[in-house]
Amino acid sequence: MTKREKKKLIKNNKRNLYLAAWETEKNRGMSLSAFCRTYGLSRKTFYRWLGKEIKAKTINRVNPILKAKAIEIYLRYKGTWCAETISMTLKGMLSASTIRKLVAPYKQMMNFKIPQTKHETYILGTAAVPNEVWSVDWTEYKIRGKKFFILFFMDEASRFYLGWYIFTATPTGEDVAFCLKDIFVRYESRPLIIKSDRAKVFSCAQWITLLQENDIEPYRIRPHCPQDQGVIERGMREVKTWVRANAPKNLIELDICLNEGMFMLNFLKPKIVLNGDVPAAVYFNKTAKIISHISEDLCLAK
Image (cartoon, rainbow, N blue to C red; front, top):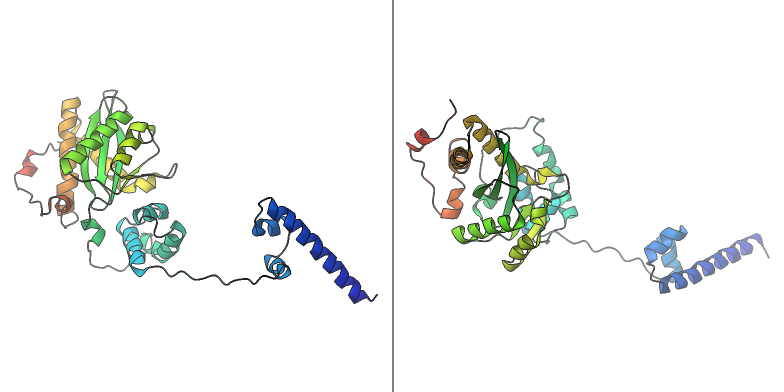
């Protein structure tokens, strides 16, 4: 027997051993990829031993409408939304990994350290579409050592604050569910998705049951990632700055200052600072007019 024939015989015996092992592992439920990885085999070589052809992967083209929608959402929220949240908004029609690839060229645009050319401001289409995604969150405020808890509901697309509620103790699941029902009644509308952090009140039975009854998809942000709630977090920070400047001394004054701060956030700031339609126009189907004497009634800090 020549040296070449010996090598061929050893190779055939080795192949037969691997094929016998594959039959055993396959009956146990192991996948072919896992088998090749475990035994240190090339999947291409093992396919050839099995007499199979490696099929070329079919390229799935992204729907241009969905692609434009994903990029529009990413730019609308200035990169604060993660790919998973955008995928939820699009009802899973685009995967998170696909969205990451789509928005990769736009990440440099979100880096404000790099100088960019000036362009005209415009309002994206998502700002005029209500009831897609709502956000809910709560914050704390202290007055003379006593804690007050303020619960906020906001429409992510238009950045319109739908409601705000003050509690003297940590809000329970029943409290949060009652507030959401109140918003349903006042606005006669329901979102497709509602975003929240991982607080216990947003995972209790009362909250989950209410969302299921109204066909609302709950979306809890990633752990330790407040940037996923960046829009409502910034709004709460602005309101707390407003309230601190007015220094309320009790619950009644806090309620008054909070209402004025939310009026500023919903009506004055978009009209004066952003020079655009106020978010309320999305819900009331008309441009809200700012009356000149309203600013005189505001409780401004001295």
